[in-house]
Length: 60
Image (tube, rainbow, N blue to C red; front, side):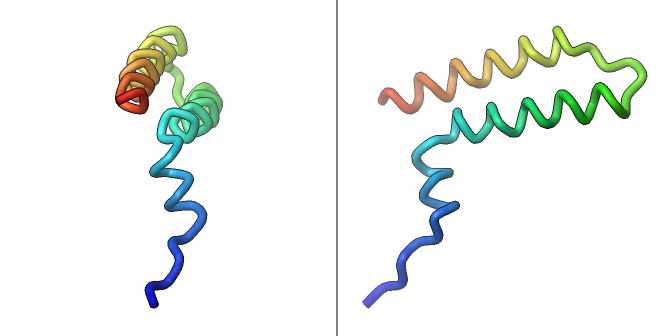
């Protein structure tokens, strides 16, 4: 009998867009606090592009 998959792995396989969104929000906050020349608008646009692509991939 095979062992069950870890819950985290299953979540990652099913919801990459949600996981990336959570990561990105924390990363934006971290970068704002640590980098002098951080451009949140540019980073947000990049995040939106990735989320759109992940969303399209999930629909397939």
